Length: 290
Image (tube, rainbow, N blue to C red):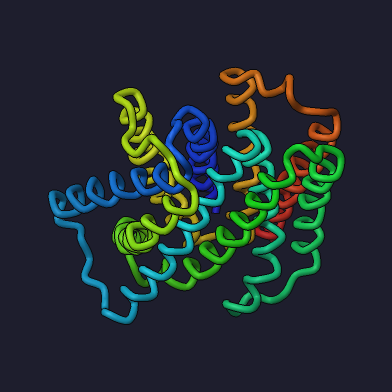
Protein backbone atom coordinates (compact mmCIF):
# COMPACT_ATOMS: atom_id res chain seq x y z
CA UNK A 1 0.00 0.00 0.00
CA UNK A 2 2.83 2.40 0.86
CA UNK A 3 4.40 1.87 -2.58
CA UNK A 4 1.05 2.59 -4.23
CA UNK A 5 0.66 5.80 -2.21
CA UNK A 6 4.21 6.87 -3.16
CA UNK A 7 3.46 6.33 -6.86
CA UNK A 8 0.17 8.18 -6.45
CA UNK A 9 1.82 11.21 -4.89
CA UNK A 10 4.60 11.34 -7.48
CA UNK A 11 1.83 11.39 -10.10
CA UNK A 12 0.04 14.15 -8.18
CA UNK A 13 3.25 16.19 -8.05
CA UNK A 14 3.66 15.85 -11.83
CA UNK A 15 -0.02 16.75 -12.31
CA UNK A 16 0.61 19.94 -10.36
CA UNK A 17 2.51 21.29 -13.35
CA UNK A 18 -0.41 20.88 -15.77
CA UNK A 19 -2.23 24.00 -14.62
CA UNK A 20 0.90 26.15 -14.88
CA UNK A 21 1.65 24.80 -18.35
CA UNK A 22 -1.93 25.60 -19.32
CA UNK A 23 -1.25 29.17 -18.29
CA UNK A 24 1.98 29.32 -20.29
CA UNK A 25 0.41 27.93 -23.49
CA UNK A 26 -1.79 30.55 -25.16
CA UNK A 27 -3.80 28.16 -27.37
CA UNK A 28 -7.48 27.94 -26.48
CA UNK A 29 -8.48 25.07 -24.19
CA UNK A 30 -9.71 22.66 -26.91
CA UNK A 31 -6.67 23.06 -29.15
CA UNK A 32 -4.33 22.76 -26.17
CA UNK A 33 -5.91 19.46 -25.15
CA UNK A 34 -5.96 18.21 -28.77
CA UNK A 35 -2.22 18.80 -29.17
CA UNK A 36 -1.52 17.33 -25.73
CA UNK A 37 -3.40 14.12 -26.50
CA UNK A 38 -2.08 13.82 -30.07
CA UNK A 39 1.55 14.03 -28.94
CA UNK A 40 0.84 11.57 -26.13
CA UNK A 41 -0.93 9.00 -28.35
CA UNK A 42 1.74 8.94 -31.07
CA UNK A 43 4.61 8.92 -28.55
CA UNK A 44 3.03 6.17 -26.45
CA UNK A 45 2.19 4.02 -29.49
CA UNK A 46 5.79 4.26 -30.74
CA UNK A 47 7.11 3.40 -27.26
CA UNK A 48 4.88 0.36 -26.83
CA UNK A 49 5.63 -0.98 -30.32
CA UNK A 50 9.37 -0.46 -29.80
CA UNK A 51 9.30 -2.25 -26.41
CA UNK A 52 6.84 -4.89 -27.72
CA UNK A 53 4.46 -4.16 -24.82
CA UNK A 54 1.30 -3.34 -26.78
CA UNK A 55 -1.44 -5.58 -25.40
CA UNK A 56 -4.32 -6.88 -27.50
CA UNK A 57 -7.67 -5.77 -26.08
CA UNK A 58 -11.06 -7.39 -26.89
CA UNK A 59 -13.33 -5.24 -29.03
CA UNK A 60 -15.94 -4.64 -26.31
CA UNK A 61 -13.25 -3.67 -23.79
CA UNK A 62 -11.59 -1.40 -26.35
CA UNK A 63 -14.88 0.43 -26.93
CA UNK A 64 -15.28 0.91 -23.17
CA UNK A 65 -11.78 2.40 -22.93
CA UNK A 66 -12.42 4.70 -25.89
CA UNK A 67 -15.58 5.99 -24.18
CA UNK A 68 -13.69 6.57 -20.92
CA UNK A 69 -11.03 8.43 -22.92
CA UNK A 70 -13.70 10.76 -24.29
CA UNK A 71 -14.57 11.63 -20.68
CA UNK A 72 -11.00 12.55 -19.81
CA UNK A 73 -10.71 14.68 -22.96
CA UNK A 74 -13.83 16.63 -21.96
CA UNK A 75 -12.47 16.89 -18.40
CA UNK A 76 -9.22 18.42 -19.67
CA UNK A 77 -11.03 20.89 -21.95
CA UNK A 78 -13.14 22.05 -19.00
CA UNK A 79 -10.09 22.16 -16.72
CA UNK A 80 -8.10 24.41 -19.04
CA UNK A 81 -11.23 26.41 -19.81
CA UNK A 82 -11.55 27.09 -16.08
CA UNK A 83 -7.94 28.29 -15.97
CA UNK A 84 -8.40 30.57 -18.96
CA UNK A 85 -11.72 32.05 -17.76
CA UNK A 86 -10.45 32.49 -14.19
CA UNK A 87 -6.79 31.73 -13.41
CA UNK A 88 -4.49 28.81 -12.62
CA UNK A 89 -5.16 28.89 -8.86
CA UNK A 90 -8.96 28.90 -9.23
CA UNK A 91 -8.92 26.12 -11.83
CA UNK A 92 -6.77 23.91 -9.61
CA UNK A 93 -8.86 24.48 -6.49
CA UNK A 94 -12.11 23.63 -8.30
CA UNK A 95 -10.55 20.30 -9.17
CA UNK A 96 -10.60 19.51 -5.45
CA UNK A 97 -14.36 18.82 -5.60
CA UNK A 98 -13.57 15.62 -7.53
CA UNK A 99 -13.36 13.78 -4.19
CA UNK A 100 -16.98 14.54 -3.33
CA UNK A 101 -18.28 13.51 -6.76
CA UNK A 102 -16.24 10.30 -6.55
CA UNK A 103 -17.64 9.45 -3.09
CA UNK A 104 -21.14 9.75 -4.57
CA UNK A 105 -20.48 7.97 -7.88
CA UNK A 106 -18.11 5.13 -6.92
CA UNK A 107 -20.73 3.04 -5.03
CA UNK A 108 -23.04 3.30 -8.08
CA UNK A 109 -20.49 1.82 -10.49
CA UNK A 110 -18.47 -0.55 -8.27
CA UNK A 111 -19.04 -2.91 -5.35
CA UNK A 112 -17.55 -0.39 -2.96
CA UNK A 113 -19.86 0.40 -0.03
CA UNK A 114 -21.22 3.92 0.38
CA UNK A 115 -19.16 5.86 2.93
CA UNK A 116 -20.53 8.84 4.85
CA UNK A 117 -16.98 9.61 6.00
CA UNK A 118 -15.83 10.01 2.39
CA UNK A 119 -18.86 12.15 1.60
CA UNK A 120 -18.03 14.27 4.64
CA UNK A 121 -14.42 14.72 3.50
CA UNK A 122 -15.64 15.58 0.03
CA UNK A 123 -18.07 18.14 1.47
CA UNK A 124 -15.19 19.64 3.45
CA UNK A 125 -13.35 20.22 0.17
CA UNK A 126 -16.52 21.59 -1.39
CA UNK A 127 -16.91 24.00 1.56
CA UNK A 128 -13.46 25.31 0.70
CA UNK A 129 -14.54 25.89 -2.88
CA UNK A 130 -17.72 27.61 -1.67
CA UNK A 131 -15.67 30.10 0.34
CA UNK A 132 -13.80 31.02 -2.83
CA UNK A 133 -16.91 31.03 -5.01
CA UNK A 134 -19.18 32.96 -2.66
CA UNK A 135 -16.80 35.78 -1.84
CA UNK A 136 -15.06 36.21 -5.19
CA UNK A 137 -17.71 36.73 -7.90
CA UNK A 138 -15.15 37.61 -10.57
CA UNK A 139 -14.39 33.94 -11.14
CA UNK A 140 -17.90 32.42 -11.20
CA UNK A 141 -17.78 31.32 -14.84
CA UNK A 142 -14.33 29.79 -14.40
CA UNK A 143 -15.45 28.04 -11.21
CA UNK A 144 -18.57 26.65 -12.90
CA UNK A 145 -16.47 25.20 -15.72
CA UNK A 146 -14.00 23.87 -13.13
CA UNK A 147 -16.76 22.02 -11.26
CA UNK A 148 -17.89 20.42 -14.54
CA UNK A 149 -14.29 19.35 -15.03
CA UNK A 150 -14.33 17.68 -11.60
CA UNK A 151 -17.49 15.69 -12.40
CA UNK A 152 -15.93 14.28 -15.58
CA UNK A 153 -12.70 13.51 -13.68
CA UNK A 154 -14.68 11.57 -11.07
CA UNK A 155 -16.50 9.52 -13.72
CA UNK A 156 -13.19 8.81 -15.45
CA UNK A 157 -11.52 7.49 -12.29
CA UNK A 158 -14.50 5.41 -11.16
CA UNK A 159 -14.88 3.71 -14.55
CA UNK A 160 -11.12 3.20 -14.79
CA UNK A 161 -11.14 1.35 -11.48
CA UNK A 162 -13.14 -1.41 -13.17
CA UNK A 163 -10.50 -1.94 -15.86
CA UNK A 164 -7.11 -1.62 -14.16
CA UNK A 165 -7.05 -5.30 -13.16
CA UNK A 166 -7.48 -6.56 -16.74
CA UNK A 167 -5.51 -4.16 -18.96
CA UNK A 168 -1.88 -3.03 -18.63
CA UNK A 169 -1.70 0.66 -17.60
CA UNK A 170 0.14 1.96 -20.69
CA UNK A 171 -2.09 0.01 -23.08
CA UNK A 172 -5.17 1.28 -21.26
CA UNK A 173 -3.83 4.82 -21.53
CA UNK A 174 -3.23 4.42 -25.28
CA UNK A 175 -6.78 3.21 -25.98
CA UNK A 176 -8.36 5.82 -23.74
CA UNK A 177 -6.42 8.77 -25.11
CA UNK A 178 -7.03 7.56 -28.66
CA UNK A 179 -10.74 7.82 -27.82
CA UNK A 180 -10.15 11.31 -26.45
CA UNK A 181 -8.29 12.31 -29.62
CA UNK A 182 -11.10 10.92 -31.77
CA UNK A 183 -13.89 12.80 -29.97
CA UNK A 184 -11.96 16.08 -29.95
CA UNK A 185 -11.10 15.77 -33.66
CA UNK A 186 -14.78 15.22 -34.49
CA UNK A 187 -15.95 18.11 -32.32
CA UNK A 188 -13.17 20.57 -33.15
CA UNK A 189 -14.82 22.24 -36.22
CA UNK A 190 -17.97 22.93 -34.18
CA UNK A 191 -15.95 24.12 -31.16
CA UNK A 192 -13.84 26.53 -33.19
CA UNK A 193 -16.99 27.89 -34.81
CA UNK A 194 -18.53 28.54 -31.39
CA UNK A 195 -15.32 29.86 -29.85
CA UNK A 196 -13.24 31.40 -32.66
CA UNK A 197 -9.50 31.83 -32.22
CA UNK A 198 -6.78 33.29 -34.42
CA UNK A 199 -4.06 30.99 -33.13
CA UNK A 200 -4.30 27.43 -34.45
CA UNK A 201 -0.63 26.41 -34.20
CA UNK A 202 1.63 26.51 -31.13
CA UNK A 203 4.70 28.71 -31.11
CA UNK A 204 8.16 27.08 -30.97
CA UNK A 205 8.31 27.64 -27.21
CA UNK A 206 4.80 26.22 -26.78
CA UNK A 207 5.79 23.06 -28.64
CA UNK A 208 8.39 22.55 -25.90
CA UNK A 209 5.80 23.05 -23.15
CA UNK A 210 3.43 20.65 -24.95
CA UNK A 211 6.13 17.96 -25.02
CA UNK A 212 6.67 18.37 -21.26
CA UNK A 213 2.90 18.29 -20.72
CA UNK A 214 2.51 15.13 -22.82
CA UNK A 215 5.54 13.08 -21.80
CA UNK A 216 5.91 13.91 -18.12
CA UNK A 217 2.51 15.18 -16.96
CA UNK A 218 0.48 12.71 -19.03
CA UNK A 219 2.36 9.50 -19.95
CA UNK A 220 4.45 9.17 -16.81
CA UNK A 221 1.88 10.62 -14.40
CA UNK A 222 -1.04 8.55 -15.75
CA UNK A 223 1.05 5.36 -15.76
CA UNK A 224 1.91 5.86 -12.08
CA UNK A 225 -1.70 6.75 -11.29
CA UNK A 226 -3.10 3.65 -12.99
CA UNK A 227 -0.58 1.46 -11.16
CA UNK A 228 -1.64 3.03 -7.85
CA UNK A 229 -5.32 2.55 -8.72
CA UNK A 230 -4.72 -1.22 -8.65
CA UNK A 231 -4.22 -0.92 -4.88
CA UNK A 232 -6.19 2.13 -3.72
CA UNK A 233 -9.80 3.22 -4.19
CA UNK A 234 -10.88 5.78 -6.78
CA UNK A 235 -11.91 8.05 -3.88
CA UNK A 236 -8.42 7.90 -2.32
CA UNK A 237 -6.88 8.69 -5.71
CA UNK A 238 -9.13 11.66 -6.37
CA UNK A 239 -8.90 13.07 -2.86
CA UNK A 240 -5.10 12.77 -3.14
CA UNK A 241 -5.31 14.71 -6.37
CA UNK A 242 -6.59 17.59 -4.26
CA UNK A 243 -2.91 18.10 -3.42
CA UNK A 244 -2.42 19.07 -7.06
CA UNK A 245 -3.53 22.63 -6.23
CA UNK A 246 -0.86 22.83 -3.52
CA UNK A 247 1.94 22.32 -6.05
CA UNK A 248 0.24 24.13 -8.92
CA UNK A 249 -0.75 27.20 -6.90
CA UNK A 250 2.72 27.59 -5.42
CA UNK A 251 4.14 27.48 -8.94
CA UNK A 252 1.49 29.96 -10.15
CA UNK A 253 2.43 32.31 -7.33
CA UNK A 254 6.09 32.19 -8.39
CA UNK A 255 5.54 32.42 -12.15
CA UNK A 256 2.39 34.55 -12.51
CA UNK A 257 2.22 36.44 -9.19
CA UNK A 258 -1.42 35.33 -8.85
CA UNK A 259 -1.46 35.94 -5.09
CA UNK A 260 -2.00 39.63 -5.91
CA UNK A 261 -5.41 38.79 -7.42
CA UNK A 262 -6.68 36.53 -4.64
CA UNK A 263 -8.72 37.54 -1.59
CA UNK A 264 -8.41 36.15 1.99
CA UNK A 265 -11.41 33.87 1.34
CA UNK A 266 -9.26 31.96 -1.17
CA UNK A 267 -6.75 31.02 1.52
CA UNK A 268 -9.48 30.01 3.99
CA UNK A 269 -10.97 27.71 1.36
CA UNK A 270 -7.56 26.36 0.47
CA UNK A 271 -6.89 25.38 4.13
CA UNK A 272 -10.16 23.39 4.26
CA UNK A 273 -9.24 21.51 1.08
CA UNK A 274 -5.73 20.66 2.30
CA UNK A 275 -7.16 19.53 5.66
CA UNK A 276 -9.54 17.07 3.97
CA UNK A 277 -6.63 15.51 2.06
CA UNK A 278 -4.52 15.05 5.19
CA UNK A 279 -7.43 13.41 7.04
CA UNK A 280 -8.01 10.91 4.21
CA UNK A 281 -4.33 9.97 3.99
CA UNK A 282 -4.23 9.31 7.76
CA UNK A 283 -7.46 7.33 7.46
CA UNK A 284 -6.12 5.11 4.64
CA UNK A 285 -2.88 4.34 6.48
CA UNK A 286 -4.77 3.57 9.70
CA UNK A 287 -7.20 1.20 7.95
CA UNK A 288 -4.26 -0.59 6.32
CA UNK A 289 -2.61 -1.22 9.69
CA UNK A 290 -5.81 -2.86 10.96
